[in-house]
Length: 146
Image 1 (cartoon, rainbow, N blue to C red):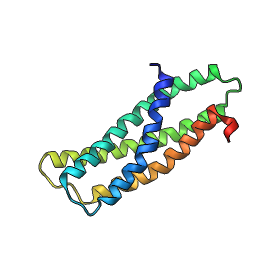
Image 2: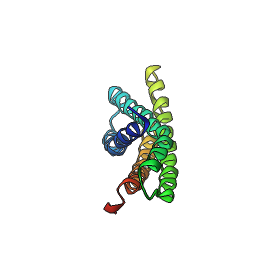
Image 3: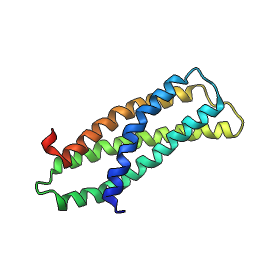
Image 4: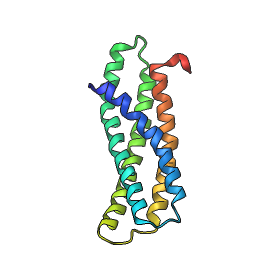
């Protein structure tokens, strides 16, 4: 599987699963079950890794699109790349918060009660940016839809 296809496949997972994660975090803010939070932190960390794949396969995908699309929309690609970088950075912060939570739980310590709220806020912002970034990505390949 080459980079452009890996990019196309991997970008959809964070866009779909991050809103699900936000709902899961929100519905468990009052729940202090360690098992649930281990899963939430684990899924958040997994989404960070998937977003990393999307981010690092982006430049090769842009090169591929440049060869395939007749009227290469340079401005759209650059805008998509900028917002993709912002989404990636937010997901990295989400992953770091998850590592903090997981490391506390695996050391039999209670994580800071602020971690779930911080994770919720980061992922809420991330959902908005991921949706906008996905919109820009769709405009690159399918401009007739917009």
